[in-house]
Picture 1 (cartoon, rainbow, N blue to C red):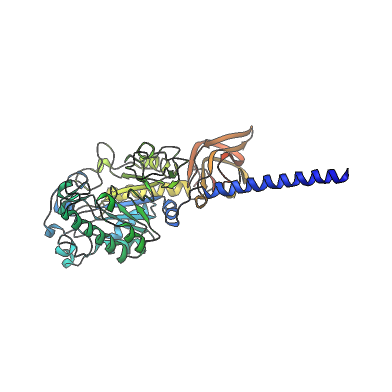
Picture 2: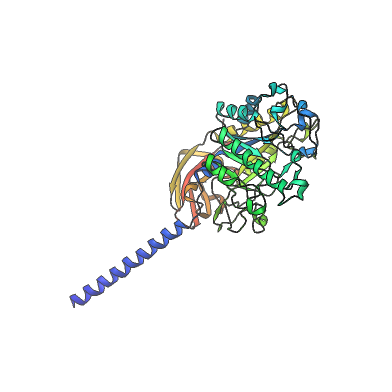
Length: 467
């Protein structure tokens, strides 16, 4: 009888061990299947706020067509921004709380704002600084001087000097032509010059994406990978290290997941991406978080990435910028503000002042948490030394482990018991909740649904009335 009981006991142990092994195996397989970002993507998401500086020859030449859309080629002698100061630009970015900045090295006009011999239309042909100016070099140096990560914008979908429109020469009709092949080689060399001359860059930003060889475009990805292996690539049909959010109004939807579905095309132009650009796909296998790009001058009938006279009334108010922050950074996205450079080469004073007001407000709101913790698992407590009035909660997942949380709520213990202060689905890089001021004695994060063990990088609380 004892022998029979022992046999049954051993059988049960074996079944239990086997079940545990299966569960462990399934857990490991599930975790392996969770998309995770590259180190470059993590750095980009950590940056949270960026500034995109827009300047091209049209502005010093006196052509103020909205968003630099005038299909003209200007005499390089007209390029003379006598006060241009990239330090002043980066001080504006720093004041706004930005941690990275991008410069339009060559925009729609095709004017090359660095030392290049690719074609005779750039700073080498301008008398400005005796033809030896290099704004890309100056911009990168200023970024490093003030602790801002530099990125560069390149246009390969419009280049008026080359007659390029919609990615192709002859104003869009030259796909597959010899002339297109010549431009493709120029675009590759352009990418090589930018990627190889200026050290590590935060990202290369191809406006409207870059066509690849199978689409009739240049072969830029191998060049990017060779010279900028730790950078972020934006964007092409085969690689979008982040995605466009789908609007230029300053908001992402909620939830807004960092993942998107696989497919032959992995860009904002993909048919299966277009409907979900603002919210993402929690079951997607491509890590491509949302970028919320918006001009600073986007109010009262103005929507302009480039300087134009008498458009100061279009500058977003501080409160409007704060709304954008909550609805971008607070929705697991990155906020990229478009800032104009005037004909003299400076950020205008009204824009500079508004950027500083915005940065000061963000610093005031979120520089001093009342309490902060981190941890793992579905329950995380946040202890405070004494009762506190709070009106904000900030949550961050450790996205190096992927986005694991699917449903959660934050509860505060009040004098009348536990109260739900915030609830949602996506945390991702950052989730910000603001609510009516509530007095609490302690808090807890309860993850009610996840696809694997959650890793919480930050759980913090704030009282925005306190200085």
